[in-house]
Length: 207
Image (cartoon, rainbow, N blue to C red; front, side, top):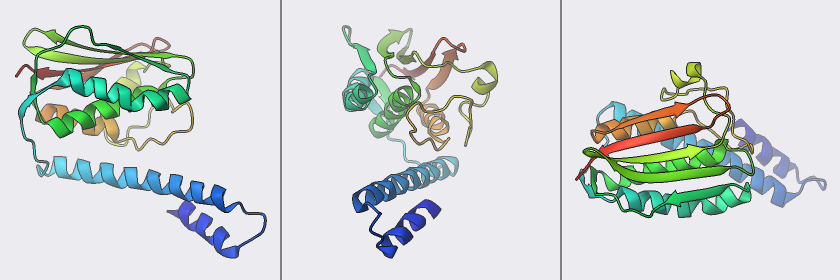
């Protein structure tokens, strides 16, 4: 909010050395950061108070992942990152909330792009494992230390890894993912070693 106010004050001065287009872009970026933070805070609040509606029904996790890949492909390409979706084999439907499923996979794919250095790859897979369907998002980023993994799904987690192109992080995304997955009788975890990238895994019961 302070940044938005500062930019607005500079515009109000109407100085000739100010690029209004540049200033408008900065205000928009700061407003988006604030919007993401408030939205995430509201989501966490609803979940913790039990006010998040969960409408369980058969859902296509395979298709949800495919759409997330296509949605984030332009952003990945802008960072020279390749997204690879192994979609050769369709998986069974899962019992989940369709809207929350989209939110979960968007968050995980977005994070993979956000924390991956330029020129790397991200691999996504969906497959059946026993009575569950598992989605995997594997990156070639810096990896996550054991100490960071213990805080990974906590609120406002501040980890050693940082977004590689100055992207914003509220520290709430993974906390929301964990609560949403568990509300649908699933589980989420991370497998990683420092310097070896990270793989986030989500399992949900077969429909």
